[in-house]
Image 1: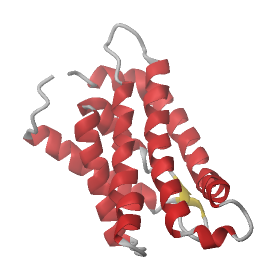
Image 2: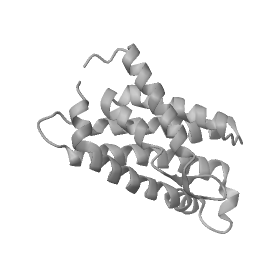
Image 3: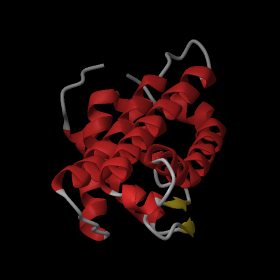
Length: 178
């Protein structure tokens, strides 16, 4: 596949960002200090990454992160902003590792790519939590607290993403031509 940016790639990226923004407003539950389980808001970003690759997927994810900040800003420090918005959502582009050629269904590689993307996002949010929000941990270890807090919404998001993408993978795979 020609990985140069073209009108089709940019248009799809914009559409996937818009769809992710819309889905982010459908919340199954919201945590008090940030983070929520949504109706699969990461899925369009991961579909883009699977279709176009890791690099473009990370760029579209980072762009979504910036838009998410504009729409729902929470700013504490410039490094916190980078960790919680463009970097965290940009790492969802790792889902692009889940593309497998049309010779097999590729559920294993698809699951691995999705899991790596969500894990990247989790690591970024966890670092932000440890560095900037350790006071919320109280007597607990800030690492344990931050991991636990972030997993309360990212694990359900991962499960939703895996289920939906596995359900739509066969028809989706036919439309993904590189």
